[in-house]
Image (cartoon, rainbow, N blue to C red; front, side, top):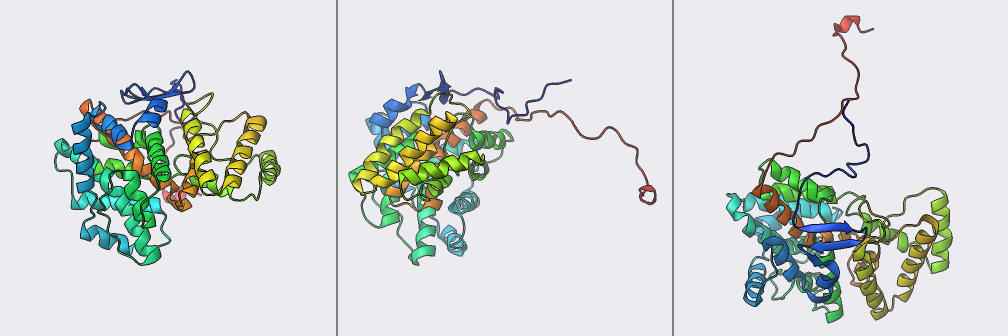
Length: 373
């Protein structure tokens, strides 16, 4: 009898990739050979996006042309704006991005696979516009101008959201968060996108499917859940008391542990530094202290470490970003990783179709309806 893995395919090798290594020695992460620590310290998100899409870090002219193309592609078609204006203000922003991507795929379809790089750059450029245009229209009644002359996606998003240029601290903090979220091997949403790509479906269908997978709280939604937990508490002592009680009731605490990392999530250490800087800059030291105490309790009681989502929550809060937008920020970055995996899947494609072990009833004889008791 065939052996079956009952643990969410844990430990199963499902393919090959040259894009990232996750969990080297239980802790490491690289994008095409570059450590996440080096990229977060020295690169801008656009450089990392170029690296993932085109396989090498850009030269000066390459980067300038890439940034120019992204700036030119920020606009939203009028028919897409009409759709966004019809979506309720109560919609989850992830649903808005899923719909926006699907609609754009009908208005600007990928006619040939040779167009995939243009499709990827277009989505990378305009998805922040889609998100903020919908948000501003539904919550302020404004039809904002999204074709701003910002040099980076981080600056463009924060300026569109807040109506003013961000500080350099805010811009760089958000830029780093985009780098950290950009790529992560065969995670659930990426694998979903690769499965769809393996059917030879179009680019937008694969990205839309990835967004749907990321929508779930066990994947991208953990940062929202982490913020909802943190903001329950007035101070670190209250957080510790309540958290111990929650653990005694075996409640799941989001933002801790990871399927692949065994010792720590290297991205968490990076975003934690930025969370502290941002909290201090806006007078939210208590928010950081509560987060730090929760981490201490989880390490002491459960031997669990924070993943990227946990300290991202307080960082995003200090950037003035509404909690329901936290997971969509993940999308704005991960489009690069999804796109790169779609390219890779298409380059050496075979339909992804695993087998299953049947555990249903044994063969049964048909009975006419009048004999079924």
